[in-house]
Length: 112
Image 1 (cartoon, rainbow, N blue to C red):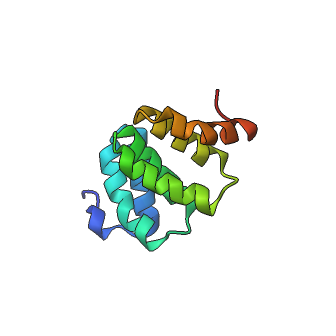
Image 2 (image 1 turned 90 degrees about the horizontal axis):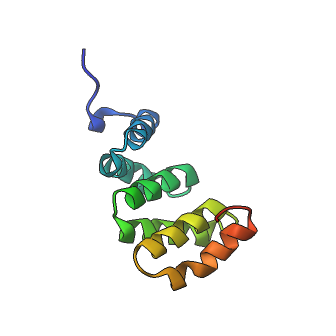
């Protein structure tokens, strides 16, 4: 008996599979699997953060930035979202733009 297809998964199983894919460094696959969850559950910070991390690690920096900007706007006290946004902007060659987010993350006890 094989594993169910991605389309046949319920939300919990989809998230679990995406987490497994992320942990095994299949970042693009994890990001793709999370797409419907992020769309259906835009209030779920855990899903959005895993999606943003998957985008970041698969070098989909524009998509990571979009998700993270939405997160820091909605949850300004999420230090990790600020840190990852700063790192995303740094990696995209826009470190100066990311500096305020890095300072916020550091003030929240994260960062360098």
